[in-house]
Length: 186
Image 1 (cartoon, rainbow, N blue to C red):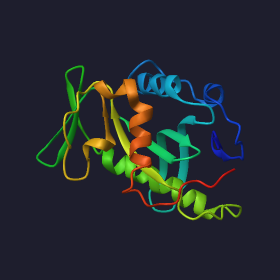
Image 2 (image 1 turned 45 degrees about the vertical axis):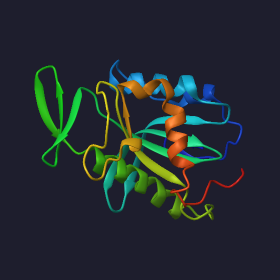
Image 3 (image 1 turned 60 degrees about the horizontal axis):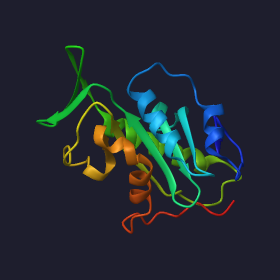
């Protein structure tokens, strides 16, 4: 399990452990996503927020949330607040009358691969690529379909998805389409 920026073995982690290691957040989109995740976790599942990696390919990478499922893998979640849209190949978020371009797919995908490269560089990690997937959470946006060619609906977590966010993450991680290795016991 990751604790802050360190990798430690802790197979007895509980949802309460997630509360002890999360960083404080202001109220907002990330806070709502974190609250939904922590409320739905089962014993042994852990959510970490604000994990940072210094990655040789992507530079400094911050993952909004890593959700560790001992029997399914790791979900890397990028959170975007405000009203998020995708049109003409561009992602935009609008909040308080201001609009700005964003690239949540690049951020989320980079976070997933930074995690995998980090584990691969650890001398005591001998398990190959861990099963993982990237997700984009948009708690202020209703998501009804894919958002562009890279952002399949199942990787998007909208306002209506927070009530079953844990199950949605696990469904993707345990899908028969995901052929990466499931985390080893222990």
